[in-house]
Amino acid sequence: MKQLISFLNDSSPLINSTTRVICFKSSKYPLLFGRACASYCAQLLGSSFSYQSMQANNQAAAMAGLQTSFLGTTFCYWLGSLDELSPSKQKAWTEFLKSYHGPHTLIFFSSTFVGSKVLSIETIDLPDTVDGSLFQNIAQMLGAQTVSFRIPLFKQTKKVSLDEVYLFVKYDAVLGKRSAQFARDWLPDMIVPEVSLFSLSQALFDRKPSSFFRLWKQLAHRYTAPFWITFWSEQLWRAYCYVRFQRMGKLLEAKKIGYRLPFSFLNRTWRNYTLEELKAYHHFLYEIDYQVKNGGSAYALDLFYATILLQSG
Image (cartoon, rainbow, N blue to C red; front, top):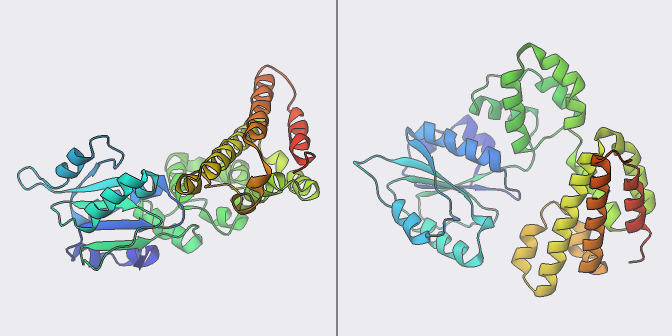
């Protein structure tokens, strides 16, 4: 397995090898970064970049197409995430990838893929977060010599996600002389640490009022009501699906949908919630959203929090 920083600093082993399958591996799926890094690999290999979804309905046709070429033309294909497939498709694509020998180069993401001893498979380990040094390497991979607000960015946070790096590089490309204003006025609201939102969500689902309102006091002003309504709506939707899959015994599906939910909920407190209860909370948010969009007050969110926190588990 090769670390991302090693790959970016020295990609010659990939260029000079007979590698035909590349797996990006980490605990989280960085969709934007994954596709961009696959495109970068295509440039290194001197191949045309293309996309073939493993979600394709006609799986056999998709696999057959990856095993043929027209007039010797080779492509570097980005396949997307293996994790998002059904168990049967995961098995079929895993077997296909482990036995693939060309003519193209196939790149995909997986959090669990284990390569065989075949030399044509390369695994690149992606970090969940990026520090200032790796940020610069990724910026150069994306075609930027530097990012004008990199220093103020890392004065406000120590680490950002791979997809955030991609977005910040793209922001910088269009800011021009306005980068200082962007760093001053927008960065503070764009880089609220995900761990803080994670802790806030954990305190709510664990029904710990003192912990929740301590964090809420620190974070409430950072975003407007539409953000919080969207954030909690997603959390509740994932929580509902997670509880439903757990009770159906569909553990793999539960694991997939549980991404971004707090660990304590995934491990313990999901048992304290009924599907009807979670559906009612989500409907409450829908009503708040309607009121806010029609001139109502966002203070109804406080009642939403109290409804969950004061409910007995």
